[in-house]
Amino acid sequence: MSSTVKQYGFIAVLVATVTSEEREELLEQLWAEKTGLGFTYDGRMVYVDFMSNKPYRERENFYGLTLGGDDTYAEGETIDDFRELLKAHNLEIHEHTIRAYSCIYYNGGDSYLDDITHEEFMSKITPAGETNTALQLHDKSYDGETIVDMFRDVSEAIDGSYNPAALAIPQDEHGFAKGTFKVTILWEPEEA
Image 1: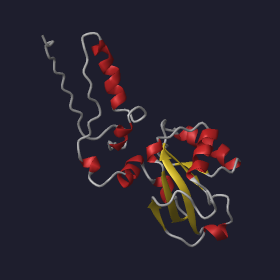
Image 2: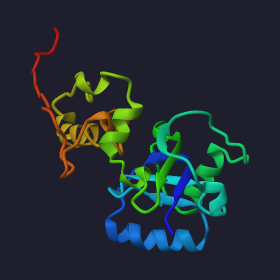
Image 3: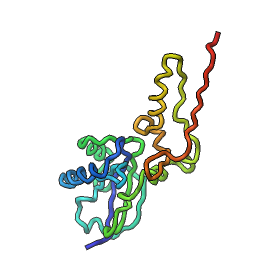
Image 4: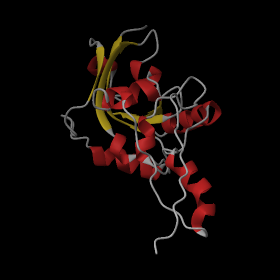
């Protein structure tokens, strides 16, 4: 029988996206181990639900989703418990994206937590207006020898795994960055 259920814990952006096949396999293992860990449907975020192994009478009769709040809960679970679970299962996250959450939903459908996309999450945790401003992702000078490193450096500058600032760039449904990247290469003569 379906009912209204509460979830609470922590959520963060993964360094490496989990494919749908990996997600299903990992979820089976994590459920069997009663970890409370789960992944959003897009595979880009991991969360812990500290309520997942509690009786339904403790999880029922609440609605909504909130992000933020204290980093501890009444049962004593902490952000460090989340980090330990991730470490035990070799899941790397972008630390600056960890957020406390609570989610209340009708379990005849999907949880708001499972449904949230990376772009929606980043817009909720990014200060208002920040995603509508230009982001400087790379600023480096090269000489004639090191210029060959530029291609790698630019690639890493737009990859959130290397540059956390790149995580604020909104993406389309295919994972491509929205907006425009402006590249200018300026040569300057040596100073005498």
